[in-house]
Length: 119
Image (tube, rainbow, N blue to C red; front, side):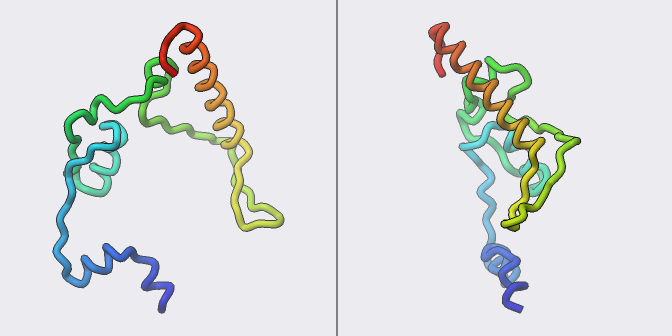
């Protein structure tokens, strides 16, 4: 019974109990491309960007091809495995892809610094 109660957030429990809910629809921290998914998926498109949200970008977005604010990689050959001494999951193919992507970002940052750009 306790586990079932804890499977829902406090917000969900308060809402179900009749507490008044107010959607904070203006967000200032996410890039608009990142905000778009939760806005459509969970809030019926109600989330909007505050001023300056469109300016939220990292310098590497312009320097590294295919590296926008929101990128998804499909690692089709990846397989999740459970460790022999742990319940943690690991995926070697995903880890290798993440390491390679990080290496590319490091190279782009070093090239930009050498050319006098920002890091």
